Length: 292
Image 1 (cartoon, rainbow, N blue to C red):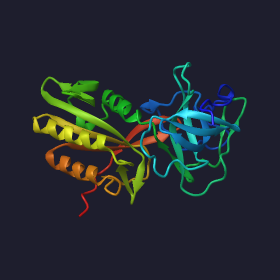
Image 2: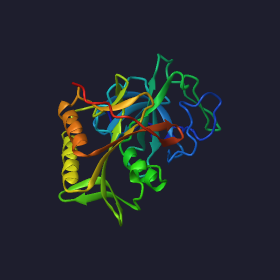
Image 3: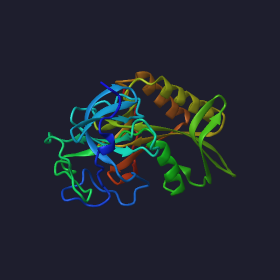
Image 4: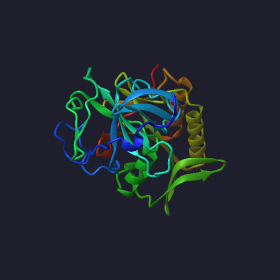
């Protein structure tokens, strides 16, 4: 199968910025910190045959879209599941769309309902909040949310800090964020995207992650040097009541998580409010105690 999307240039965009004839697929978020760009499309998931691309079906044609999520996306990549994809900012990019969200049904729903009117309105009675919710799978979102929430003064743990540097270098490593202020210790932050819920707990990672283990060790080293270090977990789905490391997937990561927590690494799991309008920052979730 060719990796070139067929009829991508003719894929009708879906205007999700105003109420359609039916019900928008998910609860609306007023003025989200990270609005989704205009001209997004909704298509049906077909397969994930490559690490950084997924195959969708849009208006009867195959469409390959970019995915930056290297995790397993366990329980999300189901045949026929609606996928919200945003247009690439670079018109010369080979894959013209990026996977942003996947619709997770609470119950069985009919096949994807997609009607693009001349007005560009999207009509989908199947995608009501009662029938399911959107899950954000773009792994660049937590880093952008950290920056947006910091500048909006919506991060309680960052009170008093005045600057944020993205991709800050420390020794031979780079961490996602460095917060500084004249009279406060440096605060190093690593960001992670969370898309899995098990036993009412939002869990990370969804696949064994040596890189994630490395980050926890680096944060413990930072705390040992007298500086602050934190994990910022963005839970991009609404159904987790707490946060826990996925000990059933990566027991080594889970053990390091609680070791880091005991050593003074700060853990901040925040729920994201995901809608077709964009992604906003919701409440912080409690961390589940370590299981015996």
